[in-house]
Amino acid sequence: MPVFPSIEWFDTVRTAANDNPEFRALGSNETNFGVKVGDQIIRLDFYAFECVSVAEIDEDGLLDVDFYLEMEPERWQSFIQHIQSDGVADAQHTFNTLDLNEPGGILRSHDPYRQNNFFRYHLTIQKFFDSAAAVETTY
Image (cartoon, rainbow, N blue to C red):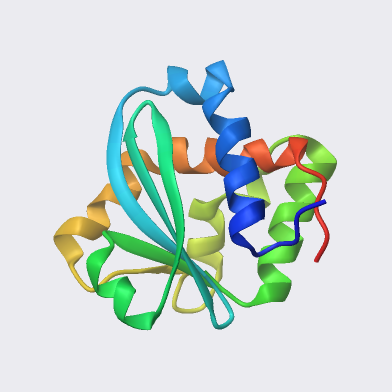
């Protein structure tokens, strides 16, 4: 059973998302972004109709991504657990809602132009994380 956050966990979700016709039906995308969980940072690369790679990066690696999503480990765990209990993120646990409700938001970027990729592809990114519903997870 993969541990969140780990490369194994994100790679398992990547496989589940890429195998999900609903994920692919959202259309082509081309973005790379980071997921910052405490001190751990994971980079996800999306191209065409799938997530093509998952890699661990350091703080400097955030300069090379379009944007990143940052929450404390407890917030990420709550987010993932809601997805796993409901099958998808409910209205209070989407990235858009979390970004609006969290003081300062959860969306970060070093380049406002590239940050727009979040808004362009947010449904695909949300569906990717919704695929975690099928992944048994430990924390």
